[in-house]
Length: 181
Image 1: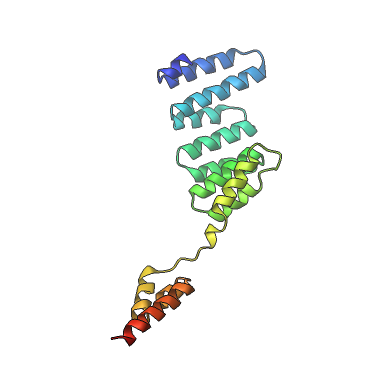
Image 2 (image 1 turned 45 degrees about the vertical axis):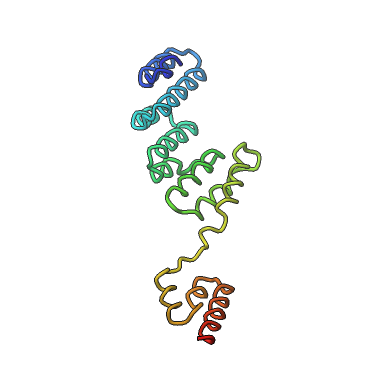
């Protein structure tokens, strides 16, 4: 803790890994190895964290740690590849964030929908689904084309953009202005 408090994350990592290698209980060693990885994350030492996870025994925690490291290093595609084949609440939740980072909102929505109801991450996943719900269905409309259509016929651009009420108002107002000129 002292080394981390003075931004000596690599030294703290080395110390924690030395303690892990000397631990007699495998559970204690695994906990120290995870704490060592967290130390690297705190120092934003993503490359070293990636190497750390590549050296550990494969398992759900290792897979999640490696994937989180890739995600934090702005490599969401590698993070998804690291998660491939794992199915835990944490991996589904992280996959949702990876998809969102890649701009695939439907896939993010679907991934968050697979977070099990009994998990601590279920409610945050539902909240995230709610916040992005339906955003992938918004059609793209060309502003230039809408402007050109409105120049030819007032309200046509608004109608093209899906604003029927605004289109009717524009046509009516422009018609009144034309009638009084």
